[in-house]
Each structure stands twice: as structure tokens, then as C-alpha cells.
Image (cartoon, rainbow, N blue to C red; front, side, top):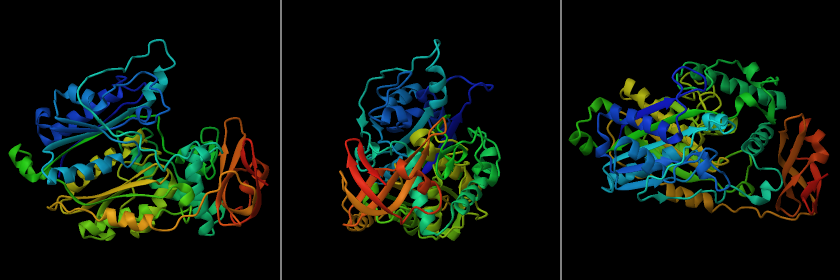
Length: 494
């Protein structure tokens, strides 16, 4: 069960701003979670941290320094001395995946009281990195650490990076552009759909005290390019991509019913994990349909199956919203309309509440827990997504008592992995068709084009496509025939 949740935030230049480090923000959120549960830090035997971006990417350098044992640093702030400290792999699935893992560990008797947390101070770090009075966030608390690595296998392809797919907006635009073409929607129709999808998210963010952008914007304002809402990667403008310039932290406390009684946790705080699933998607070049994610669909559906409910019984939902595609795909998998009156977010979503690195869904979990406590007997759903729709963890929460029930994720994963995948050509010369594309907008008005396609021999390819930018920005390029040739700088199409 989850018995305690906590959230903290601060914004540059606003009253109460304290330029807290990621460790400080996580520790403050953890204090709130422990206070919410009514237990002392000394009861915690296991801590697990969601890594910040700058310590989860092997090529990133912490600009203000960082702890070399983040979970132990947070525990030390609290006065806790847990026997086990875990630093999870990166990815937006991490918070929900940790809940799923440690719920199972508690059920198996391998843990008693577990504290999960994460935080980002990207806004503070970005501001002070350029100043002479910058703080030093380095620390070495000592102690054991189970560090699980970056978790980038199957997500980052250096071959794709070499062709310009080095950023998440361009990679997610591959998914949205393929989905738009499959639905036979025009560019204007799809942009309008994205605006209508996210307009209600801005209303939720506007009412959330922890939101980084608590401003209501209507659909037209979200999708109309302006000086402040510049195009990022077609079809995205700045307002509808995840906002990472945030200072936010969140934490949750897990324990069994027996431990809750032993520690005196009031029953109105108890929220059960009724359903859950953890699945991985194929690498981008291996996906049968670039505009879909079978793993995301099945992870959402299977969590409901484990809970024994259907989507109509959900009273609160939070669908991962770094970009439009994950929301569209998971909502469709659940059979929930994008304008469902229940809403598709409890926080405001990553573009508006904020995208605190890998830890966004810890905030979603905290919000869903509070919602189901306020509506006893209802069910809340959290869908978490990491990579490029690569890693999916889901959870169903309720005050209704549930015994622990394992998911069937391993069998479902085996079925997903058994689907034959196309081969990807590296140095490519030949003809084929465009399957999807990205157009990146660089500051200064320049554009870069990238195409993913299929050669006539059935192999997949990636290529730069600046020679056909007009085709990529007008009409329907998907399905068009192109010629591909290899060069010393990579593949290009004409």
C-alpha cells in the first residue's frame, strides 16, 4: 500500500525561493510523505531514488556538481539509515516501476517500509551555472548503493543520432506524424486535435500550486506559432512539449497493512496498488507501425485486468504527456475519449505542470493517491512512459482493500518480442517509400529534415532529407517514393 505522499516546488524569483538542490527538494518531499503517513524516518529500511537527468545520462555533466550517492544523501537529510539504497535507471517509467517493484518486495517479505523519491532543479541549475555566485551541489555521503545504470539499451541508436535524431521532440514527432497519416488527417486537423487535447491540461495546471506554468491557454493559443511559442519539431510548438525548466520534488511511502498497523498509520491514509504492469516497446526501427505502441497499449490494459476493473470505473487518470502521441495512444487503448469529463491528467501534464526529468509520474502518483483518498472506493490510473515510448509502467490505485497480485507482464512481453521485426539497413543505396519523418526547427529559422522509410527489399532506413524539405512540410510525404544514397556523412534522400 501507499500510505504517504509529498510534493514540493519552487520557482525562480518568487517568494520562498531557496535555490534548493535536487537532494534538498527530494528530502523536503520525503519529509512531507513521512509526515503524511505519520511515521518517522527511522522506520524506513529501503530507499530508492529516481535519478536526475544529469546523473542518468552518461554524456551529461552536472553543472553545479551532484551527490555521488543520491539516495543516501536524501536519507541522510532525513536522519534515516536504511539497509538498502537503490538508484533506479533513467526514464519516465521509473516512479511507477519502482512502486510496482517494491510493492512486490514488501509482499514477499523482502522490505518493510520503503521510501521512493525524486527531484529536479533544472531551472535553478541552468540559472546559477552562468553566475559567479553559483552553489556547489557536490556531496559524498558514503554508504552502499545499488546503482542500476542508465537503461539506454534499445532506446538510443547512435546511427539515428548521427542522422539528426538526437532530441526527443524530433523522435516523438516521428510517432505523431505517422499516426496522423494513418488516420488520414491533414496537418491542420492534427494540430487542432493536439490543441484540443491539451487545452484542459492547462486548466488543471492553472489550479495546481506546484505547476511550473500555471496558465490557462486555449487550443488555438497552444498551436499558433508566435515569438514565444516557436515551432520546435512539426507538429509541435513550444507550448505543447514537456517543460523541463522546473524545480520540483515528490516522494511516496510504501508498506504492508501489517506494517501500517504496527506503525500506527491511520486507515484513511491507506491506498492499495490494485493493478500494475511493466512492458518495453521495440527499438524504433523494429516497430511495425511507427505511429503506435503495442507495449503502451497492453501495459495500460493489463493494469486494469490485474485490478479486475474496466476504464469506466476509473475516477482519476494521469496519462504521460511529454508529447501528444503517448496521450492519444493510451487513451485509445483504454477506450477513453480525449475530451472525457474525468480528464486525462491530475497534475496538468508535463508541458504545463512541468516535466521534472524522470520523476514526473511520482507527482502523478501523489496526486492520484490524494484523489482516491478523497473519493473512497474509486480507482485512479497512472500511466508512465520512458524513452521514445520505449518503457511503460502502469498502476491502478484505490482505497478498496486488495491483496498483492503479480502481473502477467513477462508473458505479455514475450508475446510482444516474438513479433518478427524488419532489418535496418545502415549504409543505404536504393529506392523506397517514406514511412514517417521529422522536421526540426532550429533557432534562427533554419529547418532540418529526417526520414524513416522502407527500401524496396523490405529493410528500414534513416536518412537526412533536407533536399526534400518542401515535400516534408506540405501535403502528405508519407507513402511517397524516394531515392536513398549513402555518403561519408550518412544517408541522404532525394
